[in-house]
Image 1 (cartoon, rainbow over the protein chains, first blue to last red):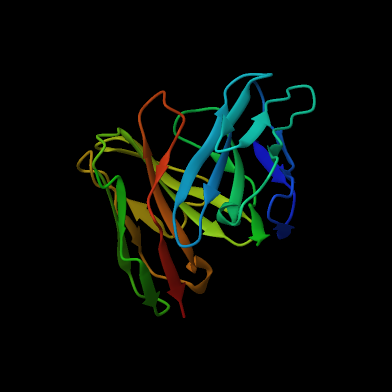
Image 2: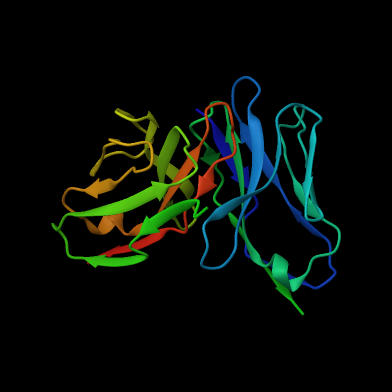
Length: 111
Length: 112
């Protein structure tokens, strides 16, 4: 079945550091790929998405590229801020009613 | 627009008790889903609905019941609570063909 594997946390960084969170997936066909973010005490919200191979999703300075050959969708940000402290989930979908999530990576950014 | 709302925010139950977690959305989305979030496991799909009167099971449906009598509401019932159901529960909704799901703020449930 479908599965998503993302790097384990927690990850602690200083402000302005470079952030990368690895995500790989197993799925048949061509799933859509997502990064969701969960800020403390809140529900999940979509950060970015990519629907086909070589697509790059981007939002709020975050980027991820859909790599079919390596089945990966790594999240990157060049300069993190304290406000980026959150839990980040990689997810995939092959239908419009079911998401398969990774375990989540907790990121803490220190001033 | 309130989006997706969930009540209660927190709940403590004793083993064997039953309760209903409420979920409502005001975006007229046809699809609604329930997930549970457990440490180290991400979110797992419990039940989902593709329209009023239509529900189906997800990955972890045992011990839960759902119904969808209106487009707006999608309650989740715990029939006889067990400690293994201690978790954070999220409701989500989306339109057909739109892969982005909108999530509620969650209900943190503890079963003792």
